[in-house]
Image (cartoon, rainbow, N blue to C red):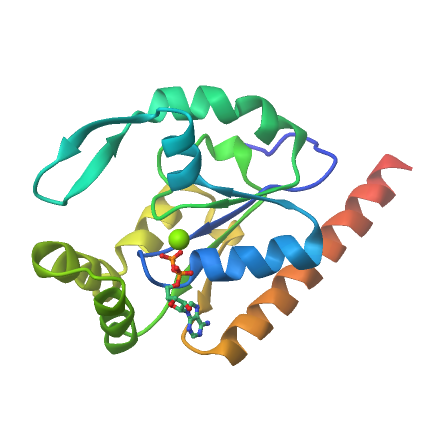
Length: 180
Ligand SMILES: Nc1ncnc2c1ncn2[C@@H]1O[C@H](COP(=O)(O)OP(=O)(O)O)[C@@H](O)[C@H]1O
Ligand SMILES: [Mg+2]
């Protein structure tokens, strides 16, 4: 489905937990002035979390309530959405999707530092090894708008910010031309 015309594009930043989404989004929001929407936080602040999943030691998301609450904001554009899943968002919301990637050793160390243990730690490292989030994004959005970005080093982050800024500038110049 074609993305509708907006004053600014909506960007989805996805990837396995610990891959660097929030770090990149913080920087991007600062540099671009776009709005960073951290889904886990929005869900918590708007009571979109249901019963607790005992196996994963995390709450279950009320997707419909969350999506309804975000619809208007997303329709205006200018948002950077940060979440480890992508399939339940409406396809029309996003102009581009970036899937952050790193190697399993780096991810393991980051998740340990975050206090993850046991099944939660293993499942998240497996999720990266099996490219689960990349496959999910490719199955949910047109392949040509889904891009993988390496998110292992600070240098990677700098170049990712630059690539996304270039894409944004391009989007604005193309959409301004169309409007004239
Ligand atoms: N490009 C990067 N290079 C080095 N460390 C990074 C990079 N991106 C994130 N990190 C580190 O990895 C950890 C997890 O990052 P975070 O942004 O919280 O991940 P996510 O939001 O995807 O769960 C943090 O300690 C962060 O400082
Ligand atoms: Mg995060």
